[in-house]
Amino acid sequence: MAPVKVSKICCIGAGYVGGPTCAVIALKCPHIQVTIVDLNQARVDAWNSPDFKLPIYEPGLEDVVRQARGRNLFFSTNVDKAILEADLIFVSVNTPTKKSGVGAGFAADLNYVELATRRIAAVAESNKIVVEKSTVPCRTAESMRTILEANSKPNCRFDILSNPEFLAEGTAIADLFSPDRVLIGSLQTSEGLDASKSLADVYANWVPTERILTVGLWSSELSKLAANAMLAQRISSVNALSAICEATGANIDEVAHAVGFDSRIGPKFLRASVGFGGSCFQKDILNLVYLSESLHLPEVAAYWRQVVEMNEYQKRRFAKTVVDTLFKTITGKRIAVLGFAFKADTGDTRESASITLIKDFYAEKALVRVYDPQVEHEQIWMDLTEAIPGTPVDSIKKQVTLCPSVLEACEGAEAVVIATEWKEFKEVDWAQVYSKMEKPAFVFDGRMILDADALTKIGFKVTTIGRGSV
Ligand SMILES: NC(=O)c1ccc[n+]([C@@H]2O[C@H](COP(=O)([O-])OP(=O)(O)OC[C@H]3O[C@@H](n4cnc5c(N)ncnc54)[C@H](O)[C@@H]3O)[C@@H](O)[C@H]2O)c1
Ligand SMILES: O=c1ccn([C@@H]2O[C@H](COP(=O)(O)OP(=O)(O)O[C@H]3O[C@H](CO)[C@@H](O)[C@H](O)[C@H]3O)[C@@H](O)[C@H]2O)c(=O)[nH]1
Image 1: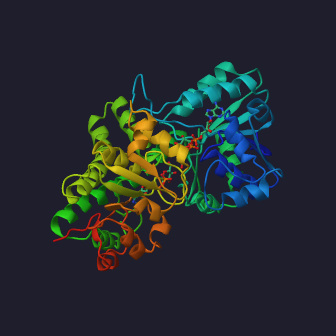
Image 2: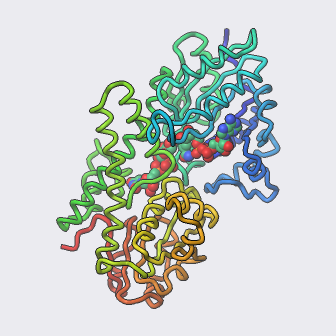
Image 3: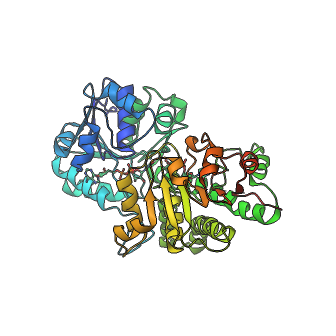
């Protein structure tokens, strides 16, 4: 058998990964028909909206969708039709941390992956290459194969590949156009290698072949968890050092710069912050912790768990610094929180450090004023009601106000907290902000984006993460 030449792709899951990834495949491979399906009608409607009000904000995404939609890119809720027609199917559904049952709080919830796999088995009438795009624990492909083989029709064969996605939100399109690498894992059988070649040929339409890495299935699955764990570990390491800097008078910017100059370490991902957020880092490390425990490797589990614990510590430590600096009480004080997204250039708020900070300020009875340039207000209320359980949203609204601009958030405030590194916050007229605030006016820069000296000259009392006052 020779590798199949892919002509129709179905992607199950039109989220942050399925949407941008397959839209880019459609753009770069005009000869391939790509259909992205989802059960969520509202999401599909947004992808299809005539004015391109897409369900996710990602720089450059609208342009890609404008070029390909209706040509060879389609969004639909007709999951079965897309499965039936495709020769290659990406499974790109969510794999959140389990909330209950065995492994709650750590293990990945594979229910959506299983449901999608069962749907493929039930509907398919011809051979399919099934690709795990979702981030999954090591050996999930084996469970998928068992389900597919037990439920498939006669003469219908499935080849399963692992093809984890490494895009980061905010830079998804640039990452997809020019990925550091594309990783494809397959069984090392002749059928597995053929399937791997079929998918590699799709990417080869725009990715240099030396960047397309083909490996074994389990290595591919584990590499995704490993990459995220090591990236998050760098942030927790630099954040741990930021606490030492604050206590000694060293400057984490200078330390990270000096350390990152070592070519073996490199300069990227060494920015101290109020803590990492996003839908992936915490979830994937907890997944790795669970995997390690399941494999009876408690020391390995404890090692990776500490990366998440350090992140929690960093968020708590920052909130405490705000309270301590404001004379040990923020009761009834106005605190402006600038940024609600977990990082700049995204509207995504999953695991955002901002949520933890606001929850802590709320518990201290502060009056919190929030501004974010992208996040929908409805999303903020949803996140806060989930973070402050048992409190109706109307009670939260007595202490938390959502504001339409930086200036309005800061009006009458005693302190400004920078929680997300939006470029807009650097460009604010800080002298004007100062004139509108209570005095003394405090700034807490949780992202190291502001010019502390310039703000101090204006009159602000500035606290920057990782910078001691000694
Ligand atoms: N968000 C990221 O930046 C990122 C990057 C790399 C990898 N990942 C991984 O990719 C996967 C998807 O993440 P996401 O952020 O796109 O999630 P998401 O929640 O944004 O999207 C998942 C979509 O799948 C749909 N879905 C679930 N079950 C379905 C089914 N049976 N049939 C059809 N549609 C179904 C949901 O309705 C949802 O729209 C996760 O495993 C995640 O860990 C995410
Ligand atoms: O030096 C740094 C770099 C990042 N962050 C924070 O870390 C979090 C995650 O940032 P980033 O990794 O840029 O965004 P994600 O979209 O979460 O992307 C990560 O998670 C994805 C999902 O698995 C992977 O595909 C990507 O490769 C991986 O970078 C954010 O809160 C950032 O503000 C820091 O605090 N300091």
